Image (tube, rainbow over all chains, first blue to last red; front, side):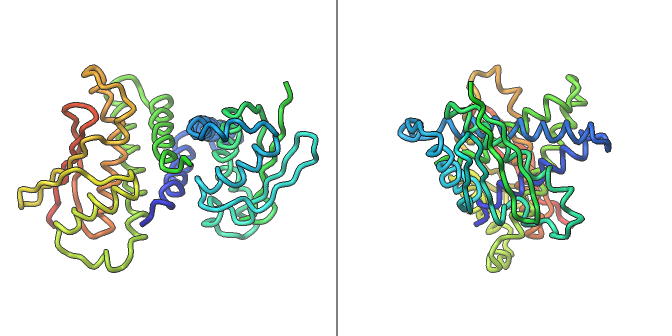
Amino acid sequence: MADAALFEFLHMEMVAELWAHHSDPGPGGQKTSLSVLEGMGFRVGQALGERLPQETLAFREELDVLKFLCKDLWVAVFQKQMDSLRTNHQGTYVLQDNSFPLLIRMASGPQYLEEAPKFLAFTCGLLRGTLSTLGIKSLVTASVASLPTCKFQVVIQKT
Amino acid sequence: MADAALFEFLHMEMVAELWAHHSDPGPGGQKTSLSVLEGMGFRVGQALGERLPQETLAFREELDVLKFLCKDLWVAVFQKQMDSLRTNHQGTYVLQDNSFPLLIRMASGPQYLEEAPKFLAFTCGLLRGTLSTLGIKSLVTASVASLPTCKFQVVIQKT
């Protein structure tokens, strides 16, 4: 049945609910809602990370961890793999999804681009939270050049 | 991996978020959050219902529809079937789950019973929304006598 869609529908409701009740129409209110969504994603990512098999937690190469996100995490959450992973070998990674499921239902005209950030904040948090459980501190941002393609940029925070 | 847990974690975050930002501590604020959660569940249930295969939509016996919720819907959302279904044959159905997944993580002392409603509201809406897509108007309430057992009462609204 529809279990794969459950997360997607729930995510959509969450975004709608936060925007209906939380936001001032101004940029300040939008920023709050984005950071609430990011925070929820972070905690869900942490919790998912804690359920990983022990052998997964043992890999210590940064690149292996990123590959794990692109494959296992993405399949678990979105039933597909990330399309590409690039790195500058200095702690910055760009993960590209050519048809990001949480953007697919949006109309694809350029006028909808400005709506995209609210559909990306939760997932940025999800990546950051999973990385955190795996012992890696990071900053994660997302950008969309043309819907529904989406790039997540992960910048590792060296301690 | 952890995909089965994704919904559970997300639901937990949603409840926490609504209680952190929406509620006055008084019963009025709690009521608002409960009805927001119920509404989100309703819309997710509707959306899930719309993805059902056409043959499912064709069954017209009320009892068949309820059996479908107990089996297919429950498996899709909770990876388990409902434990029992009873009816008075006059439009009232009691669906019992002996270990309702959204309550399992709660400590089981009787002092936690009063926290239970916030973990049930979304699912009441989910049942009502799926029924609505299947053409049945209903009222759905939930009650807990001892954690994590939970009963959902569905009262069909005749038109």
